[in-house]
Image (tube, rainbow, N blue to C red):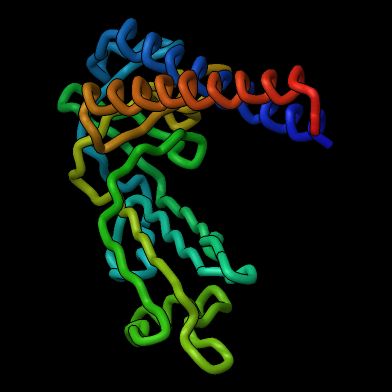
Length: 234
C-alpha cells in the first residue's frame, strides 16, 4: 500500500513540475515575441494589443444580461461528503460572438474559444441556506436546468461571470494565418494562444507564479513520494 501511495505522490509531483515547465516556456515565448502592429502581421507567432469588437451579433451574458463579445458563466455547488465536502463545478458555459481586435492600424480576428483565456471576473455572487438566490439568478440557473433550492434548504452555490465587452483592451499571442474573408486571424495552430484583458506584464507575472508554484509544490510531492518508497512500511 505504501508503494501505491508513493506512486501517487510521484505522479502528482511530476505533473505539477511539468506544468511549471510549461508555464516557464510560455513566459519565454511572451518575452521573446515583440508586439506587432496589426497592419504588419505576417503568418506565424505574433503578439498584438488593441480593443475588441463583435464580428457578429452579440451574445447575452446569463447573470447581468449584458450584450457582449464573450461571456464565461461558472457555477459551483457545495457537495457534502460525511463531515467534509468540496466545491464542484455544475455549470461552465463559455460563448462568444466572434471577436475582432483593432489597434488603429488594422483588424485581426481572434478565435477566442481556442484560446487560453486570462480574463478578470466581472461579477460574483453566493447563495446558501440563509441566503436566497435572486430571482434573476434563479432564472439563469433554470435556463441550464439547475436550481439553487434543495429538498429542505437552499444549496450552497457560488456564481462567477466573466464578460468581454466591445471596446475592452486586450493582449493576444497566437498563430496568425489567412482568414477566408480576407486579412488575418489568430488561433492556436501548433503553438500557444493566449488572450487576456491584463497587461503583458501581468500575464508574464501570472505564468512566472504558476511556474514557481509548480516547481516548488511538485518537487516537494515528488521528494515525499521517493521518501515513502524507500522507507520501509511499518
